[in-house]
Image (cartoon, one colour):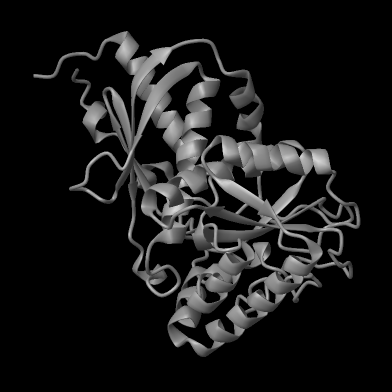
Length: 336
């Protein structure tokens, strides 16, 4: 016979469930949403989902772990904004490698002002692959975005004009490699044909024709329906997300840093677009490492810019239902 859960415990488990649901709005590779949350009476656990349709795109789970790091930071922000202090243990169980993080040690405190400012950005954030405007991002704004990433364990290197040309050449080469790899094409076709499932990339978020961008965006193998202006993003800034080693813990922390940077960029009116194609092939990934002077390992390239306001914002990508990503069975019985 189950006992009724104390009111304080119900308050916590409700907050954990809501935070996990909010974390479901995080961006992920091909909008695969490769995370699952387990709500326990005194903990929230994050697990990685192995998607067979990412086996060629991301064989080492680098981008999947990075995506889960984004979701982890989103959940932390949501809880901090509600006044919950907590402890995070990353990769807590060597025997369960899919368990990426456990949040525990919760106590109520005052709402974190910084987190409160970021929560609306979780819902407003989106990926607009079209060219940005001719308005450059101010240096102070870029510095704030970089600082947000560093504060969460990621590193963000802004590229100079010569490095941007190197990145453009690497992205073009990655596109050639992808075109020659049937497994990569099949996986991309899978993620762009999942209309109505709550995952993947529907036509309305993909450009109707190749945009004029300094660094080529990914060729999705089909045209979308998102209108593209005749503009060119010459004023855009490009950057590389990286860290000093190439291990799961660093991928996870870099994802948290990317989340902080992306939400800060959203708050400051800056568009951010990830460029993962250049990371997905060994040769071009090594090119990016050389751009880091061999000091670290690149996890993702990205473009930053001021959105072209002559275009309406693209719709948000779909999301899986909360019941598919958040498991509350451990607390639903009402036991302590």
